[in-house]
View 1 (cartoon, rainbow, N blue to C red):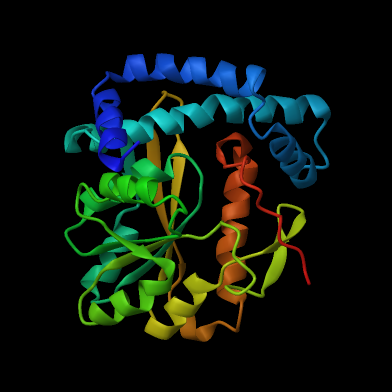
View 2 (view 1 turned 180 degrees about the vertical axis):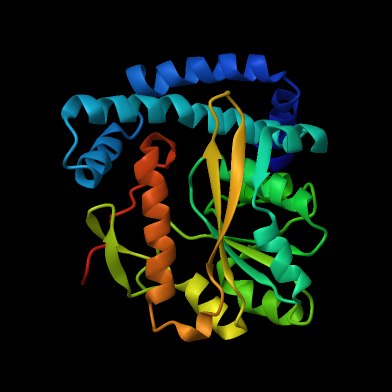
Length: 287
């Protein structure tokens, strides 16, 4: 199918009310967990390795909760195509937004960092609506150009700018005299040519991105973590901002990378079901 046909189908689905989308999500859950077993080997391997202290029953409970949450992310992302500003604001509560605003008021830009936790996609819309300063979303382009274009069209509805990882310096230099926020989703798996730094992450040695640290030191801008957590009510989240690093130049090499990854780890440990366990996070080994 062409990009226009795919987008038209998704736009049509996005017009469904939330209750109907969540009914579709319930059906998808049964299919991916009980029928298709979508990435079950990876999910269970990741969970057992990350939480060796947990019993098989505890691991199974986390896995089922994860599979129950995953299709919600899918239908909520589709809803982003046509969701209103008012509905976005209603569904994601901002906590400590002054941790971003105070840096702007001081004439500084912000190096934002988050993870594939909660609804990171809907979080892009909420970030876009919280300030008029430029919002750069740093991303790893998808291999499928049609889907890459569609997702970027969805994400930029409220003014965010999607920036491929390899182009971030160009954009930051262009905005060097204007406060802005650059948001990194920093828990992905790098290619070997993109990073050579391994560190413990969830009880396993993981190759991690160092871009957040490198950019923060280059620009001397503060690092602020954006935690997008899930509330009890379905489809409702909070976005909590925490300044992790005020002055990057004071930190030795790799320390900033270690700090924000450890912060991510603690968030995952509190409510593990809402992280992206189907991602083959530890596939890179030391060579």
